[in-house]
Image (cartoon, rainbow, N blue to C red):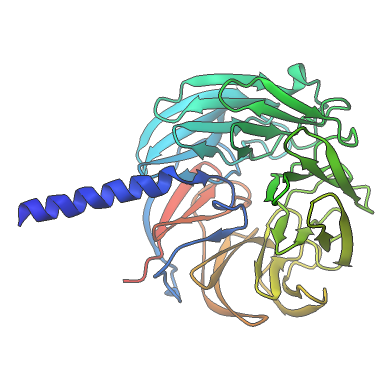
Length: 405
């Protein structure tokens, strides 16, 4: 009997490790869509919210989310102006921290990106421009570049905030220099693969999307006043989509689905749908809705509907993805939206975390609670992994049990 139990346990560990090893763990889930492929989660919360499993209250200042591997949690935090990568056990115990570079300490001081993990390598940025690759087991730095000195990047208003994208052997970063706008690096050595001049505009805090087509892969990101589509083979600029606003904050990751690109920004055109040609060389605007804006909380597209918070009016909106019309709203203040197991998780800037059931265009409340632990602004995007919801609030990372028993 003990042999059988040991065999089953060993098989489970091997399968779990295999599942994690096949994925790129990154910002807003494996596809950067905010959708977490979980099952058997709670469909309602008790009045006090789901049970708190543990809290680690010493991960430094920051607003970035964690990533979770089969054995380890990684999250960035700032201590005494330095950005660190923290490694924790799955039970929240400190393992180690490794310095990355100088962090942003002016307005909203603290780290502002989510690490990206591929097998045994972690890719991170720091607020003053360091891009680094670290060994996932030890935290030892494999290589690093400085976007300010190596690529003469202009300093932004809120620090470099990009969560890096991996594509095969490449990692992309956006210095925003006039001649070094977007740069592809060899992810094993940090050597330059290509440079795209883009439109020569400053970066705008966007964590890019990667579109895979039959003919090419396309990197989609924002610079100061435009969204860019870049051919990942050679860095050539395929197209751009200009923002009407003079604002430079375009944080939300665009979404590609079934031939269309969707994006939402609170400092530009609002909500926009674009038709992408089959070869990826051209875009055509289908619609835009300037009233449905969101600065940094992301959005979720489910079938014919898009769910997002409005920055200007502090409501959650449901947008018809076919007509651009706002078809429903929920009063819950502005904030972050993610999705798992048929439920929306909404985390607003007042610290309330709400669970909603999307029924067609409607968001039906299923419970909420106030995040009282942690420090400073409630900006970090929650993460769900294997029945646990991870919420970062400043120096604290909390783990909540959202598994249905």
